[in-house]
Image (cartoon, rainbow, N blue to C red; front, side, top):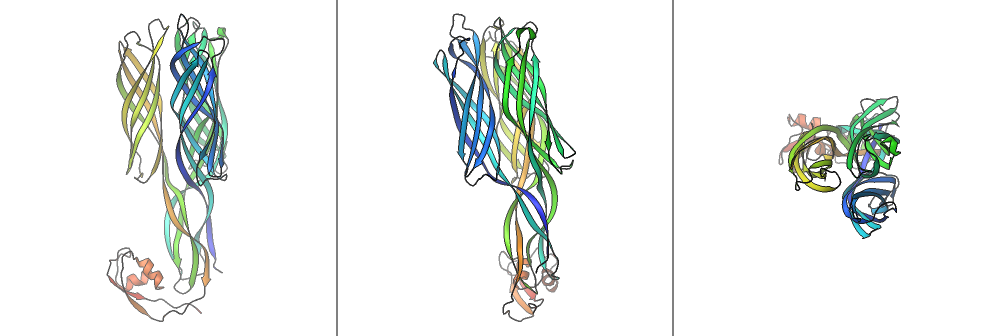
Length: 511
């Protein structure tokens, strides 16, 4: 009976990562209270996922795309009006190798919105989505860390600091606020909405993770007298996530998922808009755990057998945050429309290059300007792309590291001077990085009967390509120390092909 001491590790194993391009569409009816649509002017949207499921070889997502459309009314005045539409969808996507034991972490981006006018009262809305899906499995792995009852056991031990999963959980958070508009404005309808999550932070206390952030909301609205106005509000978000055993030294990774959005004007005399946003907060907590993993072993005096398993684990996990500053002058195309109503800033990362201790992002800021004339009774839109390159310093990162990044605007300033706009934008760059380490783990150590070994006291051996002292010692039931001593080898990790070695044999199998 082989007496071993084992240590249990909870390993967060990445099963697979896939990116899907999905198109969803649906029809929307213009309410009777609004005029007919002539054509589209500008659209914004957000995606809410209210159910997700992992099936055998597939993932399923149920949700909707909430679209706000500004349109030119088919009337004598041809005023700008707005309509809100929803595209409900269920997507079942092929993902080989996944099953119901696993968990899904998804990120969905609207790449493009399209509107087709079917008739004056009916439109077709189409959203082109990019779905980045990571599927992972939490596994408990028992690692042999010590063998007690064999005196001469030779072990090849690899020290490793891994990111062991402490736990994971979700909670719901509600961000709600009454957004006040100008007292002189009587709100007619909402034209556009945009969201950003900024200033993310976590604190740990009494088996809970406190997740805090700011939800920045920008609303474009139409007044009763036909003026187009904008308002911004920052709404705090907070949620407590229960996680037993969490401590201040742990690494907390919190994802904010949009579940539902309610935006509605209050009574005209209140001059305000009610905003309620439901979020799912998904938290995973990791600890840095130092382990000594026995990758190979043998005994000169006993015939030991064992099973070998390949285990992939996350190491060198880091969360890094820094600020990128972008300044740019943008030329307007129409001298009549120079009053900025709103600018939507969408960062797009085109390329990520990872090297030692740094990661370089290159991409562009997609700027959508909504411009009005001096009378604010009409609008035009202008799209400009501003290129950027940004290098983030991350100690210990390598070209083999896996990197995901989120870039969020945290400050924007647009100053118009006739037909030129000076843009100053600060963006928070949050980077998650880790390495995957695959190690050989032994298990089920047993003792077999000895065979008829040749009896000798020493072997002369010539080193072949791929040889190490460990492999040679194990093959001839010697030890690395004895071979190095007999051959006057100062560094056991350095031997040369063709080198002659004297291999002392320690002993025969015990009887």
